[in-house]
Length: 475
Ligand code: FAD
Ligand code: AMP
Image: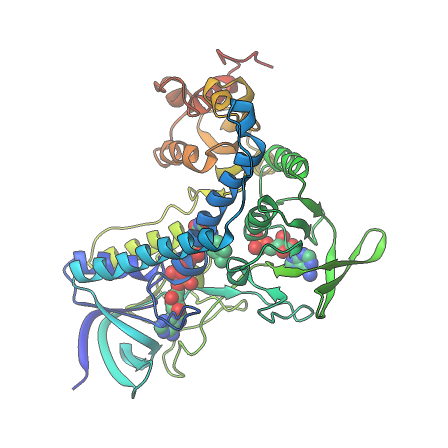
């Protein structure tokens, strides 16, 4: 007889493992199948996010930023350093140890929440049967009342610059370098390309980013993107816009990258090349022929606003479905699916999902850009506050950037908050909460902010929307 569960989750990234835990908290009998294998051949929970994405990239961003500041900033504080040296092996070991602690943590969470973990491949068959194939051993059929698909995503490969794992690498490969490349090419100036470019630039690589589009960070508010571009340039990272890579050829010395820009055919020689041109939904071997689940034309599993597929009681969540490819979006979809299965009322507010780019300065935003509101035709007002006028930012020696708020002119509702500057990724949480409660700009203006904090920048920007900033001359 097949083993029977209330819920089977396929995939244990931030979408799947959170869905499994919440389903179990809701009183369900839950199994979660995951096949992730690290480079050392060991399996680990947590998917891309914990093993090859969010966490290792943030660890290296933090370490490399400290290295950079020790060499370039400490003297301004009156701290004399000499002989600051990079020990990349230790830096990488620390990263691996943090990844191990966090992925091991999910094992503990599964145990505490009585989620049964299966290591291996899961495939959805008809009638909510799931074929589970262990790493070694024969397949077994499991059955469930509900199935949640959470198979995640994989890096897009450019046919003209295929990954070889050595010279031309994906984002995971670029997190694992054991020596700092003298020169590094990055294809794609998206979130991942900029974060990885920043890490290696701070550690000493000469970094050139090639981006096909003419606009830098096209989805970001123009004021914020322009400020970020200025600061990246100042830091020495070269970003070529309107540069479409057409070919990359490897040799023993490195990679010759050919690209086209407004002046015609160009080429660039680099030691290593990171291709970071986006990610695609990953559904290989996930869907049995008769399972009934459909993919859209871009390969995403088709779901409605509640993450229900076209098959009754089968949900799909996270990077394998439409919407931004973000860990927090994935997890919240997991919570929603598990709560809907338990018969609870649950919904996602897709309009209020924060985005963060963890470069220095950080870039974070939520809601609509000024350009989007302008196109919508709604009358709006904006206010900004520069970190150069913040006492806390000055103490931190991080005065670049600003907070910008876009609000409705008619009812004062906050429509978008955009930050470029120190700790932007932390500061944005206040804006997310405010927008989740449909706050007005005045609500933020009348909220008491501790002094001296970076969060006062949010307060002052809200005041500036009505030309009432108190610590900055209103324009
Ligand atoms: P995944 O994390 O990809 O997990 C899917 C899991 O399912 C994997 O373990 C996979 O092995 C398993 N699986 C797939 N198919 C099967 C099958 N048939 N059977 C069994 N198991 C299967 N997002 C952020 O929000 N913040 C960040 O700072 C951030 N930084 C990033 C940095 C990098 C370098 C990268 C690459 C990504 C980053 N992301 C970030 C994106 C984030 O990692 C993803 O949005 C998130 O991991 C998606 O979660 P998921 O659970 O949908 O998929
Ligand atoms: P993202 O989707 O945010 O990960 O960003 C990927 C970026 O890669 C996008 O801004 C694309 O415009 C860019 N891109 C895609 N293909 C190429 C190419 N052949 N050459 C240069 N940039 C590219």
